[in-house]
Image 1 (cartoon, rainbow, N blue to C red):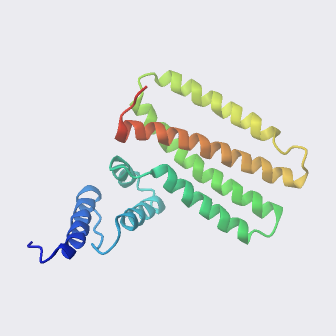
Image 2: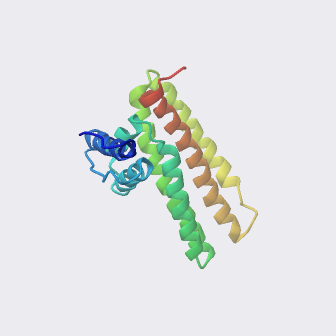
Image 3: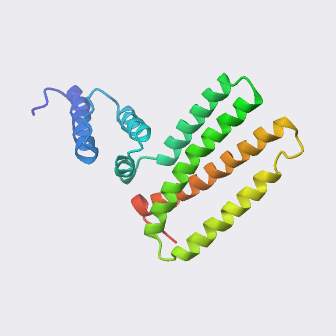
Length: 181
């Protein structure tokens, strides 16, 4: 393809980016789309379909899965809370977010187990973290009455999201940057 002018370069670069994304992820995106919008579209579809192979391919290209999944789950939680009419509804919103984070945590933990040599050490660490989370969140809000159940549910979600992001970071170390530890 011969460039007609310097102004043709951005379109050529977008076409090349579309081709690279197609080759890496098997998904074709029109060259008019921005790189960010392209990856966001691919990741959103992959997340909704729980297509972890595509997600991991994108992560190996440097896509920040932690920020993406955090934004998605928090957006869903915010929408749920805006529609909640009762304490039970709000608790349900928190529980749904916790379930989403727990799904991410389970996948990330299982992947990390395939990467580390000290599997028993990681297993012990995860069990200790679960015990700590359960004790911390069971105590949280126990004295707040009906609002306490929301605080307890939110605690489970917050702590599970933090742990998920820690393990996502560790996995990204293996997938992209390489580990220093």
